[in-house]
Image (cartoon, rainbow over all chains, first blue to last red; front, side, top):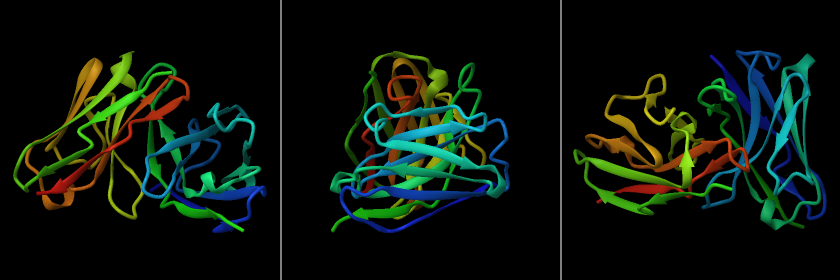
Length: 123
Length: 109
């Protein structure tokens, strides 16, 4: 059974870089799936951050593109999120997840999700 | 950019009742790329429906999805106590690639 687990600092200072890792078990990062990050500010809705494919392809939310990098460590079967120049508006629960479906020719949806990790941006 | 608008914002019903949640797209979309998620407090979202009407693995058949074009509906035929949660619709393929509605909170009346 596929499981995803986010990890990283729970507190980041303004202007610094938020770095999170998603450890994947039960599936290979190199499988034919996209892997994605989604965030949710406290009490608010869901916002897609970006995704990557094992070939190295990435797609990012245009609103965050200038600050986001998603990378992969195949040897550890995990992928990472870096978000630079953070502000209080980046305070959120960050989820990693797998994308399912053919996407380019069929349905495309997010399943399963990690449990999420809260990151607070504050000095 | 396609915007997904969910209504109502909050729906107050009793267990055993039927719930109808709406997701309206600002322009016509492919139903293949419309999904629904359930989120309970303190938990990650859970996939319910993909391709507008296909139930995800393990989802009870009281949950059903329908719609086409700009109007999509999630129906819960008979509410169980565990169904009270926030529900999100999601579209793939616009900009950004994954767009979520703002959510509908289903609360116990």
